[in-house]
Image (cartoon, rainbow, N blue to C red; front, side):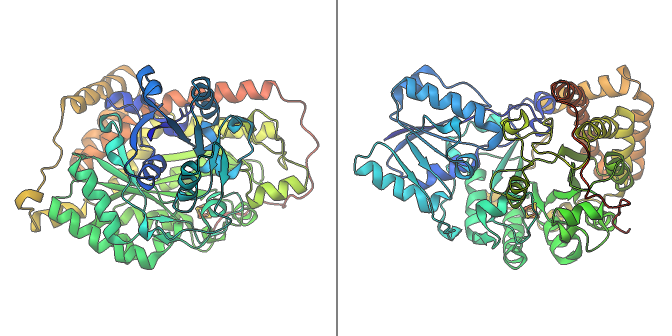
Length: 542
Ligand code: SF4
């Protein structure tokens, strides 16, 4: 079977990083790991091609070659999913869809043209799909019926199908599921609350495959909560450390984890020794009342600021997600987030207005309360510039205004340099460098660290020109550069690279304001405020 995998296009979001990618001459941040896994789970006798629409268009000869089209995507990709289904159908090709969007809303109008809906986790439903094809069936819907597969048999994703040079990072996955119970989260709906992990050998085999394909850049562990099963993570990390030592530490890692990572020093130490360089934390808000409303109680058990400090002091750069628009939230939530980010110095703070995702506990509650706005513009996709897709308990215009102001403050060019500088002064030298010096790699496995390329030099020249000469940031830029060289030279390169990221955020500030103002202009007057409002904002103790 000649199978064409298509990964739909993403709209421009905070995470699309166009300006950064332009600087480093890459097209996309991360590859479509789900589709690569699907390709590995299907019969390997099938011929396969993959087109990531974020990299390029599907070529005419690829449409002509295909006998089956497989499309997978997330809710933000649904518009292009519909377009690609229509294009395949117009050529008379059978289409199978799967992935998070199809699994959570299989009857969505965007998926109407698909012949096969292969839902839930592919380890269970893909064999059912293959059997149906073998019986000559031309349509069908396959679900796991609530069953969650053991992922210890999941094969190495088909990384060989990628145009590797288009990506800034590669991704691998160790676990699925998360033990927590955040009301707005769809991960626990899709993958359950009992984290299932691969074996250390499986993950190492995936890294080995990437290494043999010539990959030498970052690898993102896309687990929604990497430390959801701490016991198994602590079995993985020694194997990962050993593999890195034997190969000369060719990869740096990043991942997502819950804030309780800060309470486990041993785990953090193991991570930095494997060359984990950054970790994304879902902090959401410093308002304890909102965290309780969102059932994110794990973020209220200890001081969020101290947790960020501990993780930073271990050598992991913290990135964090923040949300505005929780029920009962008090005026000023946006500025409280800005103050928290400035106090902790977190360089990359992603902010969004709360969205109810289909089938989550929050969605069900809001549906019962009659507060969902399902036909709103916001319901058409979920990204950082969408207004809330439900009626909040305070005026939506206040929330949107606070959001725009907070985002603008966070990425104001001078404030950004100050924050990144103060943060990088706190980061200790990377521990893996010492380990590598003590254990120099030898033999065919050895790998030289990726050197500085002309693309890096060009990117540096652009950043110096824009931030150090053209803009009014020039004084801070040079001052902080000399400061880093003097006080924390081990982190100098990383510091410049994070400064470069503001080329994206600065542009995104304008997009945020424009898109939100357009949506506000179409809104009817605000309904009266709801009554369930606590008297005072409650902050997490520090
Ligand atoms: S900690 Fe993160 S992944 Fe886990 S339930 Fe909460 S939001 Fe979802």
